Length: 308
Image (cartoon, rainbow, N blue to C red):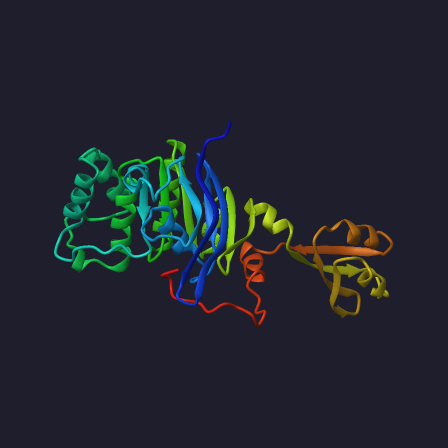
């Protein structure tokens, strides 16, 4: 029987008249890296805070390694390395002092040699005071404090926010190494490339509801594709438009651009009847798939800043 790191059922939460979560259902298996994808205000941070009992949901149930965070939040926190969207740090303390404080909160069970290794890999000066740090260096402190105890579950809210591309890649490597060491990783992001890089599975949240769960590759496969077809001579292409899921976007002499929603099989079979000389397929990025879930519908709920 699979061990579940996270089980969330029917989670709802409102802030006044704004319904931040409208019934979130989610399962994360132990050892997985799951990306929680959505724009600011979609409900990512609210969900993560509910997992840690930092805020209380209006309804629904949560289990973290089988533990109810409302019944025993301390036991849950002992299992978790948490990186909040914004970590408040004492400005007059050094990074080392901050991290030793977090170590004491964990009963001084943190391996300080590992802390130094993390700091070295992230190019973080532990002797620098917080008030003299850039946003990126403050984010590095936050990353180190989440990883340093080698917890079985990492809850990371926008883990690479404020980091340059090289440091982002190093954080991705650290996350993968944590997984290799047995950790489960659940991280929120609105950066598509980030999810494509490290997530094994993606949960997309829209207006407080999970609208899709799949591997990143599977999400790409269900999206539209654009094809540029060059024929050996001008042809009548209207029959192609009759193929389910196919839309003719443009035609210029013997070159036709089409859009295909879903499977390609029907179009490929239809093209067999034509004198095709060249065919170019453009695969959509995960970003295009993501944006397709957020097309304006006229009934979008009010967004509140990432208190949600």
